Image 1 (tube, one colour):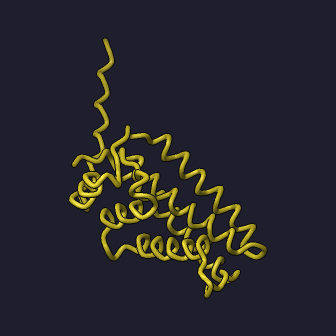
Image 2 (cartoon, rainbow, N blue to C red):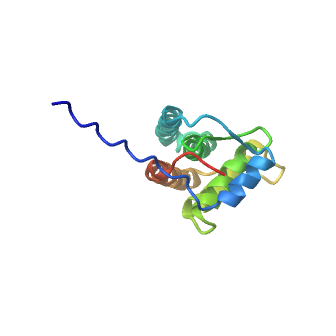
Length: 167
């Protein structure tokens, strides 16, 4: 007697929160559709984890270098959440659109979005200092390490909920 075929696993639904904003970002050319790629998302998360580990080592000796890595770890984790939806930031959208898209999808009061925005602004100050710039301290880098760990952990929980973006 032949085995009964197993029912197909239901596909994850497209994330509906923030669909209008993400569609707008696509229309403005700040995001683009790409093939849904869970393996690429895993690779981005792995890179984020490596950045966290390296930044942990640098917090005391090179807090600004650590801060830049922590921002990058956070950005990579958010980019992974876009990748599993078949979305990617364009050069027009840059780093800002990564935060904009995830803020739209997770809501304006989401801590990930707020923390990412702060990390992005400070990283910008580190990379493009003005005459009044005060270097990032080890304490600030340590706080950023905890924040980046939080973001990466939240994206690891969020990503399995996401399907291809349809909009």
